[in-house]
Image (spheres, rainbow, N blue to C red):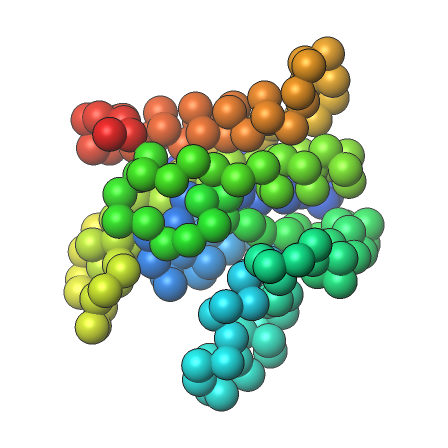
Length: 187
């Protein structure tokens, strides 16, 4: 795995937002930011395997309701940020087959703005080939993870839609890495 941009990780609390190809992504993102990350994960992931459920909950993953307003998960995330921690989300909301196929959701930007902390974009390339959607087993493939410059909520206060502008900035920064690595952006 190659990493880049670790020096861009801000001190103190932040929300980390990465693109999402694989079950490997939470691990490689946490390695890239060199901090423990408390991830919010949709509750649909739970209930299929007692082992998976116990492992993810032991690792500090917070189940996030997709069908209703996830007040409990948001309280946990806010408390983690207030205590100086890092909270992770995948704005695509699902593991994707290719970058750009799903419009990013606004939750990561909303949480960063609400908490007044930086939004740290992380671009992940290669985990889809190593253990992507539909894969029965993992394969040895090169993985590149890059921390992009932080998005500061205060820089977007004058926008008509600050959360939307922050989400667009996230997509632009992750897209730039994909263009460098794959030679093209979203299709």
